[in-house]
Length: 398
Image: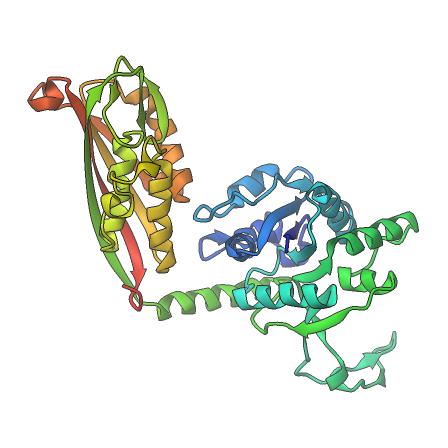
């Protein structure tokens, strides 16, 4: 099933206070929006993610993105409207070309979506075509009049507090939004209510008590406490790995270093593209988790790796770390060569390495040195790179 997700992040969040909209505020060092996005980015069934942001919030959005997640399925953000409903409609229209079967609509102000809740949402949407997560309220609910006098006490077992992500057959939800807009009805509180108006049968599936929406300042205080407690409860083991790679010069007019094509008077003799920087980093990461080396996973005897781009090797090692719940704290690499000069390409290489490893650019260090004309490097017969990777692994997976 082709599943898409719309992340609604166009609101201003005035009730929460703060200098920026609440979805761009940070919780334990990461933006609310990034925390809301990460579960969808990690969900294998979700193929497309369409963020909808406030007009003029482009810079805030770029800064808030998760730096340790693969953003490949994230589409360019579109601007929302004056109401939540209009924002969702714009998101739906933006992905209409992809023709997804199912769409999940989620509020960016809910940063604690679990993978289990996402799986339930997709399954419920597939089965019922219009489904929303809900929880039975634990408190007694009263209906009051304008003077706050109680006029009714509904049976609690028949009530549900509705959350997001909500799941719908894409074509049916888009049609409902278009019909509501044509009728001038633009103030439905959520997509479930709009779907009800459109005549769709909406089913409630089990929500998640932890899937809270951040509305007031007190919600942020509680969220910070929750995250702080989670971090304290987790025990980490710090690991360091090293890597080294060397290649002799050969024919050609360019080199690949740090994922960047650099013009040169010679190439290198190599089975793959010969990128010593990415090879050394790959071995450093694999070493940090004691998972063999680049030759074990990508043997030079295998013809499928002939001429291969080395970015896939580093990406593989990165995923091996994350598959064990690990965090890459720092990558440090030194290039040893007499030529070419690395300085003009340093920033581009750091940016490329950070992108491949899905870490902040500030966590990548790249240096270059010569060997004072000593040895094969000094004789300009080849070049080398040495790397160090610092990672954290949860104690239970180390």
